[in-house]
Length: 330
Image 1: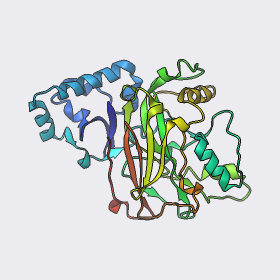
Image 2 (image 1 turned 30 degrees about the vertical axis):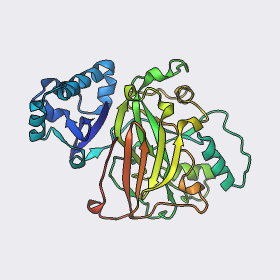
Image 3 (image 1 turned 45 degrees about the vertical axis):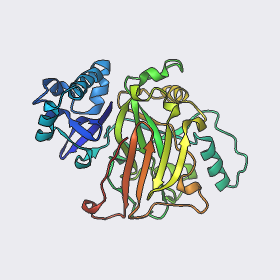
Image 4 (image 1 turned 45 degrees about the horizontal axis):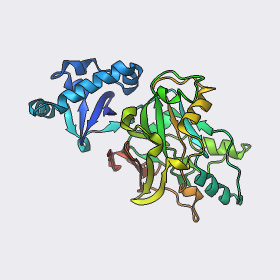
């Protein structure tokens, strides 16, 4: 299943993607009472464990198995609407923790090292990463706003992410995948030239990733059963339709279970928390010449089996009502 969060301003509602349509559970409860028992937020659905997901599955299968009258009622009531007509928020708008793995793809380590004049870098011995500010999260179609003081070198980093479905702390590699509820996409937007007097390069880099709107997330939470082998997926990042990043997970230095084991030594993850696998080669900063995002651009990250996360890029102070909005999923 592909779970979504519907932006029904000023509130959020949970739903599911059914082909090219979005099912709004709250609105569907009029016709399917069981839908009224589904929590209003995706984090609570996965926090309910197998029971929560089974309830969603029963509701979805009931609609899919219907001969047509139920679906028609749902469409007429607005409970089942075309994806193009539904405004989606990030599937998990405010997780308690977002960890982004860094320097986790071999080719990305090589390209960034070459930029610093290092031809034969050593690969990390353990996963490296940092916390991403959850308040920077925006959903599909929402604008990435270039910071007023540092707009010139804002970079994209498409990342495949996994979402915890159970509390996770001090786990074994053999059991690590049992704690995962599903997968989503994150764009680790970075202001590469952010600087502050007295701070070292690592502090500058990490703080340049925390600006508002610098964490696009979505468009869906794809449940684990939809992707039996997450390390077989392919990630593609496109800037204005041109491919910038294209990589399989076979270039990862550390497997997903290894990433989980490493960070779960320190954090106690709870349902809805997010960890990315990092970004592959092709990010704008590592290119020669470098390529950065500018106002009017459209940046899109696609992961097979999950979908496509697209966002417009605007200047600080722009009228966001005029920003292009779009969200698609395969």
